[in-house]
Length: 294
Image (cartoon, rainbow, N blue to C red; front, side, top):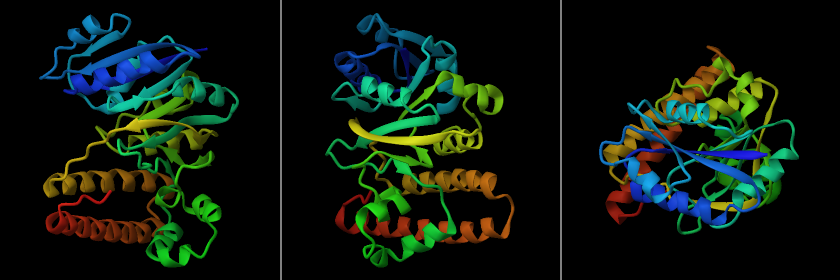
């Protein structure tokens, strides 16, 4: 089985080189290729990647048309049976690709698989996710009561920030920063490709929803860990813009799940109110204490 590692670069030459180096250094137990898509980076000369890494298959996208389209372009040039979408700001510290590929082949009904992601400081990133629901949003507002539930039951019930990534589990959706799937899965997704309606953010949740609709499950593997730098901006204006984009895309996926029902509108009100309030609390903490709350 061959794994095609698809990496999309946009103005992150040094970071992307670190990612590629880590893949070359640590991937030993599986055949693989690296397909690098440069999304028309105005600050990078993509030919320098090939000079530094001759084995990399470089695809030059003539325009930056987003994360999903960049990945679909890379997949169209991939020869592997298994695809790994790997963010350019990830660092492998062990043979994670081989470990995930072996686990993936043992789970025939798996759509998308991820592994444990941590920040550079080692903090877990909560990349095993549950879809939004009225129940979970209300339970999230009553966090002290959730502490009365034993950890494993609480983690399986809620996932997200209530789960510390310390056991493998089926989940609703997984992070696109590290996302493995069988290339044949695309035959069961709309348009036979990764949905491109979002330019950036929320596409991983959308793809996982579509995989579930096609009869698959999504899986979080705790057996290996990858560093995902994920240096989000600390500027309030950029954080607010990101929040608006995330809310918009999350709600679009929820609407696909629930339709224009009363349930959807109640969930939308609870979710948007909670997230905006959380944003302003984070903004105040940043302004007063110069500390960014993740």
